[in-house]
Amino acid sequence: MLRTLLIVALGGGVGSALRYAVSKFVQDSTNGAFPYHTFAVNIVGCLLIGLFYGLAARGHLGNNATTLLLTTGLCGGFTTFSTFCNENIALLRGDNAFVALLYIASSMFCGLLAVALGYLIIDIIASGR
Image (cartoon, rainbow, N blue to C red):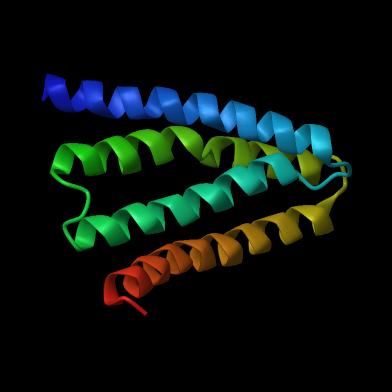
């Protein structure tokens, strides 16, 4: 159990550092009320988790520890639901209800699409098409 916790913590640390770097880059590159930085991080994280679970389902990630490192650790540390929720509350409190609803809907739609795309990419690679 301790070994598993350390593996997840390692992945989470790397994911959190990557989240900060990507979020900062996107935030410095965009303007407006829409929280592009968190949106980008969460959609990229969805794509990654789709890729990782697609690989794991085919036995290409090695053992369970690698899957935990990359999914629960890296993706869990990289994506951020709490920030997503906080940003939506801030938008609502700032009289930006339309932007909040757009953010919620686009995050859900694009997130699901990104996970599905991750699986599809692995399916295509595995089938040799």
